[in-house]
Image (cartoon, rainbow, N blue to C red):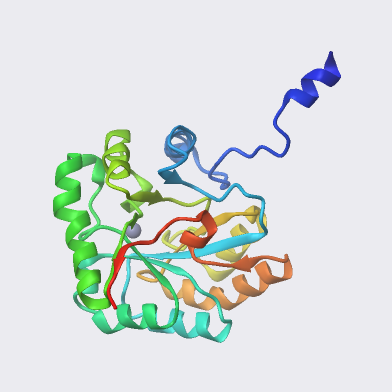
Length: 249
Ligand code: ZN
């Protein structure tokens, strides 16, 4: 009977989860995104589940002054990453957005003005924050992103389904480096999180719209993951999704 029970469990099954140990104040967030990833496995993602030894580096809140320096590091190590950009910053740094595409990175949508999407109806979210941002990116690059990272990773189920029906996919993360958090974002602390939580199929959250710690730690973080045998790819490849609605010639 015991043997039968063991064999009846799916072998190697992995449930999507947020790997960080978090303070009590973030437990509710963790439970919510893990529930959403389990409930909407075709639309809402925390990680890849295919067991490949690959990770995706993702950078939020740019482009900004730090972004070209991050791009230099990625170029040096020949790594392709995913940038979830803000519409209002795209307007300020269109040449950086062009450079991302030229150098083989993927661009996702992080809304126009970084609101908490839970305060908007799905239609308001879509028309005021999501569409204008991808339209701007499309005008600059010829690529119209359909991967969304919600600000703070926070989005209601209703909005997930609304976007899913329109062909959008929502990309959260499985490892938060906390490079956004002034109280725990030294290079050493960021690296410690990677070394503690790395896993196959990880989506790693960082910020090119943030502090210099992100820039300083990036080469060390890349080397650490390489030593562990990981390859780096963009989130669309990690998850086998289309990143763009259309591409112009
Ligand atoms: Zn953000």
